[in-house]
Structures are given as structure tokens and as C-alpha cells.
Amino acid sequence: MYRSALAVVLFSAAAPIAIAADAKDPGTARPPETTVGQDPKLTEPFATKSVTNHPQVIGWPEGKTPIPLAGFRVQAFAGDLKNPRWAYALPDGSVLIAESDTKKPISANRITRLVDADGDGVAETRSVFLDKLNQPLGMLVLGDHFYVANTDSVMRYPYKAGAAKIEGAGTKVLDLPADGYNNHWTRNIVASPDGKKIYVSVGSASNVDEKLDQDAKEPRRAAILQSNPDGSDMKIFAAGLRNPVGMAFEPATGALWTAVNERDHLGDDLVPDYITSVKEGAFYGWPFAYWGTNEDPRHKGARPELVAKSVKPDFALGAHTASLGLTFYTGSVFPEEFRGGAFIGQRGSWNRSEMSGYRVLFVAFKEGKPSGAVRDFLSGFVADAEKKTVYGRPVGVIAMTDGSILVCDDAGNSVWRVSAVASAK
View 1: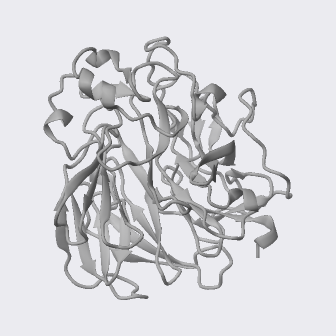
View 2: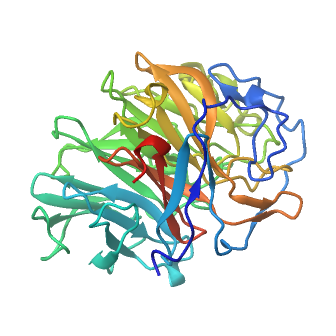
């Protein structure tokens, strides 16, 4: 039931608005404004008690959708999926969705192909593109190969342009350390703009490796790996990144950027998740330091030399927002202020007394760096903040060649399409 799953909601065109920290929009869960930006205000560790505050997912009622920024509309591109976590647009215009779950026994472990043949913004057909995988997330077409980043490996398959499914056996390109703390089983993969290198993100196995007995023994964790497309010459490209999931190349400079899900249990407003450019050979602090050279008290005095070399990230996104998705807008359909900017899927908090995240955030870029107001691009995922109920949780975000944005809502089992009103068909 693709067309009837959820109705289209249309909003009148208007200029985007900046985030207001005191807004009471029931569909938005915003962190304090001071924890977002190039220079966030950091509280002291343990300034507030660490809490466990998991949301209750109630699903989307018929006719209910997320709320887009004024000037945009949202519609259900596809529904009735099984934990759609990540998306990838194929060269032929079809869309691949990685359906995989934290709970291994119920994970679909497949990639589904969605096709919107008539271009109305709703996928009419779906089919299994590849299955019998192990918690897949990242996908990539590079030359005549299709890559899948499972939780324990990167697999490569023969690929023909326009193919409705993968035919033929896969080859393991890279072994990866499997599983991880909370939702850190996810592995993403992207290729360099020239196609000569692939990059794979691997999250930590623990929150902050308190006893230095897990992640400290596995340098491939909490890191971005680089290798040749065949898996050879693998090395640690950057380290100290607790859970770097979203990766994308910034269009103006060609620099690799990542969205990082930071650590828990230091209080409501520590540590802010962030997006950052990724420098080769750099160390970003985890688990010994955060937001530059601020030492984590749980590792006080353990590695002062690593604390001293910790690189400060570029842009904070608020603590415990679970910032995971990342894509840059390179189209020409959205208004000028969105072009070249970053869209970030924030799956939402569980370690904060007041909910934060549960939105797709937009950060404007200028000359390759974050610039300008931060905007709620897609909100309305929270049903009732007091009752801690949510309709869904946005994760993977991709920009389509038709100028629209697709958002994977894993908890809501849906994929949402957001388009500019002026370009809406």
C-alpha cells in the first residue's frame, strides 16, 4: 500500500526560519541552542544526572506525516518496510533501502529496490535487490561492482547498470569488527570522488571503553578506514570518532565529512554530536577527550598525549541527538540558501531528561564550511514529549537527482520524500 500509506501534506512557501530554543512545537525535540554551532557552550561533566529515557514508538496514524519546513512538502515515498535504516540512489533512478535492525533475530538483512516510474514521488514497485546479508547499511556502486557494508564485512558483487537485482556471488573485500555498543553495528561506505579509494566507517564497541579492554585492542573501531576498491592497502584514515555513520564529500572543497554520534552518561548536554571534516591521520578524541582537548573524567590522566592532539570538530549538533545521516545538497531545485548545505538525520535521544533530535536538520555551508542559521528541515516525529511517544525516527538521508530529499524513518517503517513546493508535481 504505497499510495494510501500516508497522505501528502502541503505547506505554503515562506522563508526558512532559524531555530528558536524556546519554541514549543510539539513535533520538535530541540537541544539547547547553545549546544549547536561552531562554538557550543559545554557544561561541566555530570552537571545533571544521567538518565535513561527511551522513546515509545507508536507508528504513524493514517493521514499523519512529518512536518517540513515552510516552502516544502512531504509525502510517503514508501511504507510498510522493515526498519529502513539507509538509502542509496542507483544511477538508473531507482532507490535502494537497507532494511536491517539492531535486534539480530528480527533483522530483515536485505536491500530492497524501490522504483517511482511515473515520477510522482511515490514508489509504485519494490523488489528484493539483495538478501541474506548480515545487518547491512552502507551501499555503493563503483564501476561494475556493487558494495555492501555489513556489520562484519564489506562485500563486493558484480553489477550491471539498470539491473533489478544482484546476480552472482559476492566477494569479501574487508573484514570488519562486528556489532557494537547500542546501535553501533552500522557500517557505512563511500568512494572518493575519483573512485580510487573507498572509506568505511566503524563505530565503537562500547560507550567510552571505561576499562580500556575493548576498543583499545581494536584500532579499526571508532574510526574511518580507507582502502583500495579491492580492499588492499587498508589503513586507519582517522581515529577517535566514537560512531561515525554518515559520510559524504563536501561539494565545494571535495573534503570528506562525517556525522558522529558522541558518548553517553556525562549529563544532559554532554557531549554534543557533531559533523566535521575528516583530516587524514587525525585523532578526534574518543574516548579520552571530547570537543577538542576537554578530558573525559572517566579516563583522567590515562593518555595525556592523545588528549593534547585531539582535533576539535567543526560543528556541534546538540548532545544525545543521535546524529547519523548526512548528505550535501548539490541540486538546483531547492532555493539558493540550501545549495551546498548539509542535511543531517537525527534519530533522537535516549540519554537525556528532555527529548532532543527526532528531526532532519539543515546546516548551511559557505566556501566549504558551516555558515548561517540551523534549520529544522523535517520535524513532527515526536507525538507527545511528556509521554515520550514518537511516530518514527529519521536516520539515513539522501539527495536525489530530481532535486528532492529522501529520509529513512526506521522506527516508522517509512521513507519520506521532501520536495520544494514550486517544483512539486
